[in-house]
Amino acid sequence: MSVQEYVHELASALRANAVLEKLLFDVGEIDSAGAVMLAEALEVNTTLVELDLGRNSIGTAGALALAGALRVNRTLQKLKLSANAIELVGIVALADALKANTTLTTLHFMSGALGCEEMTALAAMLKVNTGLIKLCLVGNTVDDAGANALADALVVNRTLTSLKLISKHIGTEGGVALFHALKTNTTLSELRLQSSSIDTAGAVALAGVLEGPTALTQLCLASGSFGTEGIEKIADALALNTSLTRLDLSIGNIGTVEAVALAGALRANTTLLSLDLSFNAIDDAAAAMLADALKTNTTLSALDLLDNPITTEGAAAFVEALRENMALTRLDLGTLFGEADDISEEIRAALTTLLKDPARAAA
Image 1 (cartoon, rainbow, N blue to C red):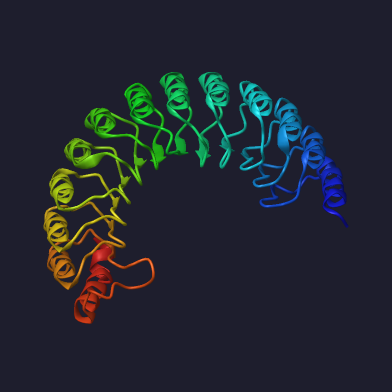
Image 2 (cartoon, rainbow, N blue to C red):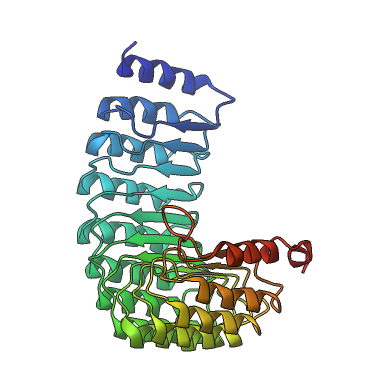
């Protein structure tokens, strides 16, 4: 049976199906004709809640058909359309359909080419949509203009809780706009803004958000370009922040100077649970500073230092700290390809014993 024949049979079944809730066609061979058949089935189906058509070839025609389905379907909650070569007219149609749709909660447009016009359409949708909770735009070409459009939408949107962006094309202008929007937005709790080109000025704007009341609880800034001063500004704000529980600063060229600032933040912060500093330049001296901060911090439970130049000396500082700190339950000092060769077996064993202490888990 060919793919098209299979999709035809499946679409026919979906029209009468009263059981199936998830349909995953990730990395398939569904073309626009197949997407049209599935869309027609969605118009009458009342049970499917998740549809993944990622990395297929539904194209613009398929997107137009799905947009039509979204105007009448009232059960689908998750839709993934990553890497499907959907052009502007298809994105606009989907965005327009979602202006009135109140049941779809998750939308993925990963690995596409979302330019200014596409982002303007999605932003216009976000200004009036009241159902979407999670929007993933990872791996697109979103630039400052697109980020500005999103920022305008976030000022008025009151339902979106998670926004994921990975784009090197977002610079300081776009970053500042997004951060300023978060001063008004009261619902976005997760922001992943990875691989951006936001510099120190953007970090200053972010610090202004973190210092005040904010809904953000999870913030990923991996592969950032904030510079030493930018990280110091973020650290100063983290010392005052009372909402963040997870912060990712991996792959950020963080060394001794930046570690001093982050250690100071950990001494004062009482809400952060997870800090990712993997793939940085944290050496033994910087590790010792972070370890010393753990002697007074009683809330951080996970610290990721994967692939940093930490040897036995730096690891020993954590052994000493963990004898006083009972909050940390996960500490990663390994390397990408296995355990760190520069940490002695004795120190490694001591860390394992301390982290597995039942009293620690119960603390």
